[in-house]
Amino acid sequence: MYAKGQHIYKQSNDCPGKLKWNRTATTIIGGYGTGPNQLNYPNGIFIESKTKILYIADVGNHRVQKRYPNGEIITAAGDPHGRAGSTSDKLNCPVDVLADENENVFISDWYNQRIQYWQKDAKNGTTVAGNESLGTELNEFHFPTRVLVDSKKNIIVADSLNQRIMQWTFPYDPEKNVGTIIAGGNGAGLNPYQLNNPNGLYLDEHNQILYISNEESHSITQWVIGDYEPRNIYAGIRICLPGPSNVHDHGKYIVKQLDFRQLLFTPNETIAVDSSVNIELTKAVNRTTPFKINENPSFSAL
Figure 1 (cartoon, helix red, strand yellow):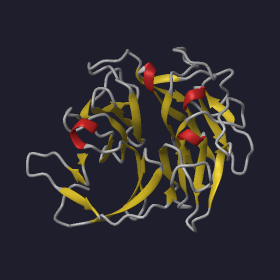
Figure 2 (figure 1 turned 30 degrees about the horizontal axis):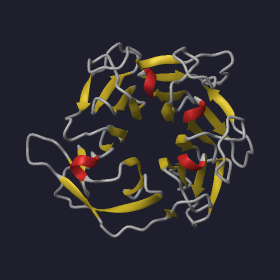
Figure 3 (figure 1 turned 90 degrees about the horizontal axis):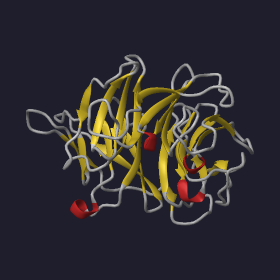
C-alpha cells in the first residue's frame, strides 16, 4: 500500500483498491510562530486513544504541544516560548512523541541524543534512554527518530544513523543500563540484514514483529524481534515509496516523504489515525490538518 497525491493505493495481483480523502479539511492547529496555537516544522504526532488528546512534536519550537478535544492547546514538554537547550527543562528538535492516558509523554529528543520522559504538568523531564552524547555505543544514539513503548514499558527507538533499532528495558536507569539491538546494527545497506536510515516504527507486540520504514532504501522491513535477519521486505518500490518516513497498523498506513521533482508536494512527516478513521497529518508547512475518509465498501484497501 502506498500514498500518491490524495489517495492511498494497495498493490495486489488484482486491480488496486483506493480510498479518497474528503478534500474539505480543517486546520486545527498551525501557522508559523511560537504562540500556543502556532507551530514551526511539526513532525511527530500522537493521538492517545482514551483521552483523544493530540500531541505534536513541534521541532522548530523545541517543544511538545498537546491539544485537548475541546480545542485547548498547551505545552506538554519543553520551553513554551520555543527556546532550545540540553538541560532537563528543555528539548532540542524533538521529532517524535507518544503519551499514556495519564498525559505522561515520551519524547525523542533528536539533537540531544536522548529519550525524555515528562510527567503531566512537570517542569522538567527525565532521561530514560541515551546519555546525551552522539556515538555508536549501546548507551548512545546517532539521532534517534521514532520511539515506542510496549506493554511491559520497554522503550523501542529507531536509532537512525546507527542503522539499528534499540530497546531499553523497564525500570529505566540509563546511567547503569545500556540498550539492546533488536534489529539492524549491521551498517547501512540494501541487504536483508541491514537497515538504511530507519525512521518509522510499528510494533505488532502479539507476534513480536517490528515494521520498520527505511527512508534511504525506500522500503518497509518486517523484522521478527530476536531474529538475526528480517522475515521479508514488506513493501518497497523506489518509484512508489520515495523515502517512507513512518508506518502504522501492521504496515497498512505508509507515510511517504514525497519526491519534490515528481509530485511537487511538501513532505508529509507523520500520520496518526483516530478511532473514527480520521487522519491527522503533519506537514512541514507548520500546520496539523485532519482528513476524513470517504469510505466505499467495495474498496479493499483498508
